[in-house]
Image (cartoon, rainbow over all chains, first blue to last red; front, side):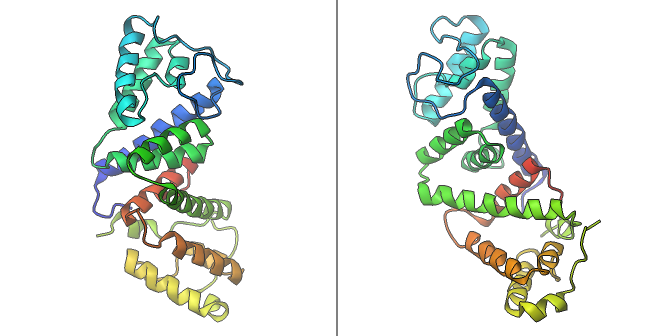
Length: 184
Length: 86
């Protein structure tokens, strides 16, 4: 797995799995099942939580919303705060902590930002979050990835999803881990 | 412990010689794994399953936009999300 990458890179990879699986499940809990349209003012059908208004946000929430708008303008090409963050803003300290993780973890590191978006797309699909799948796909399209490139990601994820099921279902002992971990 | 007996390389080779040779060559080149990995030895009980899965593996590894490293990262992310130790 390392292929010349060190423990820092492996941990960065796991941090994206941690980040996106957690946020994805929170989004499902909020009732955010579908990708969102731009400029939404009312909660979309099926949404469980209400939305904190961007304009009337104050203090900590206003500061975080400002940072989110700035990043997502660049990353997603939008000028509003995504519904997910507006939904969790009912708890300002949680909003701030969740956003800080996203800000710090979803940034260029030993793993590139594009690779992290690919991992985010993979994990969102894996945990069943249409909402975040759409978000990472949007970011990837803005980085130049087209449909064939996205299917390439899904194909790799599909293949390993299947192998995971087989090896776990049959409780097959790993005989390849040593080759992977100490490879080159 | 594995819930079924893992076949020996030679037993699988009798049913799917080409696939076994291809897997061995590819995994040796890629990982330095000198033997048939356990997951293939499990699938070998149903040789056509082994063959179609290996074909899928080859399709997934076709050159494209992703580097081998990125593919491995996707594999690791899926496995970590699924809690798969293999």
